[in-house]
Image: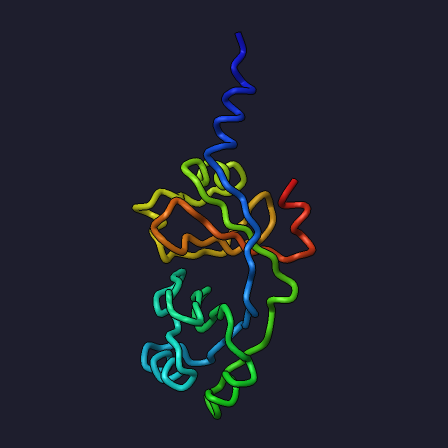
Length: 166
């Protein structure tokens, strides 16, 4: 007797998929990104910029370090950031209007993501507070594990949302 429908129902019950309510998303780039420059920039704008690459901060606004000298700021005002950074060589602009996101929760969330993404999501390798730009089903996404629950967040360009969802 084939128990495929029962296994599919059980797997579906182990995963919750919900849309993310994304705050304004700002791209911030600093020309100088050594530790001292990042510390000075954090002090100037009034919130912490994640220091190690591929890490999230937990404050408000939350930040994700995407690469050398590059952050995604969840919230915040690019004009206020530009004013606070003053003569510091930087670029700040809003990018959220073209992005959508999902939260995938549950015991089988990593299995679902790994069906289209080759990143090792084991907690020892991809712990809470980790983020990475990667491909999922050939679509560029920002994948993160914001906390210790078995939950992940995926942010993707809005124009590719339906392709990724299929």
